[in-house]
Image (cartoon, rainbow over all chains, first blue to last red):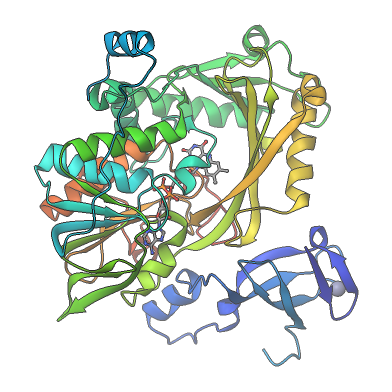
Length: 87
Length: 416
Ligand SMILES: Cc1cc2nc3c(=O)[nH]c(=O)nc-3n(C[C@H](O)[C@H](O)[C@H](O)COP(=O)(O)OP(=O)(O)OC[C@H]3O[C@@H](n4cnc5c(N)ncnc54)[C@H](O)[C@@H]3O)c2cc1C
Ligand SMILES: [Zn+2]
């Protein structure tokens, strides 16, 4: 599997660290209910099909990336920078 | 048909023409007292113990493919009871005891082989951690022996003991640990459940869960609607999809785990060896193939195959530990879909919907759990209360903070 980093171009999967579902971008506010934190940290749609998750270009430019991909075929549909991107 | 030595002998003389299919192939009835979704190891064991321990026989297992087509037939067959945390320790201990009586109980040869499991350690700190784990195992009533370097060398002379990065300091031997024939476990439970009247329905995918006034009333399937007052979701890697049919969102992310087998070789590896620091473990099947694997590919996936970086990593770790296997040819590799929870421990619990139960989150360790999981899920479905040895496998433990983090790495999806 290869990811096309918006800054570095197509790179091998080995350069990236997987963090988890893009749910991590929606951090609840400090006043949010405990259930909102539970959803944020633990509960997942976990789709068989198109998903969005966060990857870190650890051995490249160190950018956080939001990857849109298919969990069944391993096809990569889009890779966007989290910072400044339309997250 | 009961199996016996005499039966095998007489069939041998008569050209093996007397064997019959070992379970029926019934059409689904319109209603059952309970249905179990998923005909893997856990689903079949649940059905068996519902019938055997609780006398519930008007029940069905609904399997979308064929029995044993999921992870029960894809794993590397390690059976062990070397857990540390209260909550896990008594559960896997219970499972081990069921394993030890399983063949007699099922009248089926599952090739359970207690050949001993050795976990290697490579530093003083790791030795302390394994000594502590061994004591916890002994306190639980199971067995553990702390081996020093020479002790390991006596049993496994072929390892590279002087690797600079991971010199071998010793190992924790769990003599009752070992392996079993994975699909025989599915077949054995299937046959035994069928003999007690359970309907095993194959090619029957559950496509919806019917709920009225907060109570489950049945399921929709590719072979029609089936009424049931109790429904158990026991679908391992597919848990999120099936739970979503009931409007539930689970603390589960599905990941891929790969495994490998070589061509058949003469007996060379007598134990199960686990090289945790290298993410590698190995045993030898009765057919002679070296069966080995490593860690997850580490990203959410439903492809029943993995990526090359992990293949490379596992091969490197194997060569580091035991250079002698370098000439063995790998026959095939495959992957299975793992239902990973944030803390790496399973769930056997009620759901917020009355009559709907869940058995999931088996991560990469659900094979050894099959007997106790079926036993405890059956107890829960029949009595409405958790079995004491599975009482901590709660669905809401992440919200309440009662996590079971056996590895001690944290309760987060990308850590186990
Ligand atoms: C490579 C690999 C190595 C492993 N090694 C070990 C090991 O050494 N030791 C160990 O203890 N564990 C190991 N495991 C883990 C173990 O195999 C699993 O945890 C366990 O098999 C999962 O439970 P199961 O047997 O019930 O799952 P499965 O056999 O996957 O059963 C689930 C069933 O549900 C069915 N299903 C799904 N959706 C539906 C639906 N909508 N309707 C009807 N049916 C449905 C599926 O078709 C499937 O048959 C390993 C796993 C893998 C992949
Ligand atoms: Zn980059």
